[in-house]
Length: 175
Image (tube, rainbow, N blue to C red; front, side, top):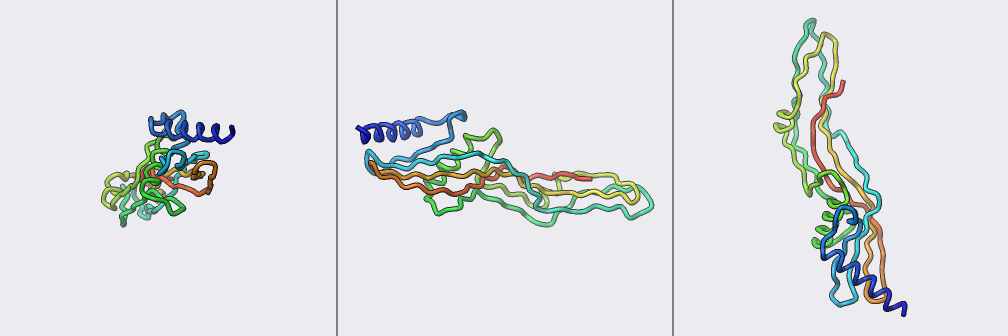
């Protein structure tokens, strides 16, 4: 009797994942296995939003007069979807879709910003004598812990790892 319940739950998870998840119930995504009662399910736990500074340019007016300064950056920055475990391309696609459906912000597989794009996005600021400001390039991303469950009939194996999904690269001015 327990074997039948497990199979019904596993099949229900697979059917739900194949039919398409909505943001409200997108915490689990599954892949079909090679047999009727096998597969793989991924469950995300608590998605965290992060913002990090990846490059900072200090602006200082050392003159005796007010002057206008503009943010100018020197390097191209690229951040990509990262999984802290070895998984197949199909599993990576499922993980990305799971995180994308579970968060209210836009996530991307890869974000790239050249130095000239960052400089164009940067601000011009007028500084009084002796005044300071800092232009910062920021990297926004989300992280989550994933429980990866493989099952075949009554046998299942679980492992946990982290996923990092980029959201944006931006520029801000800090006084």
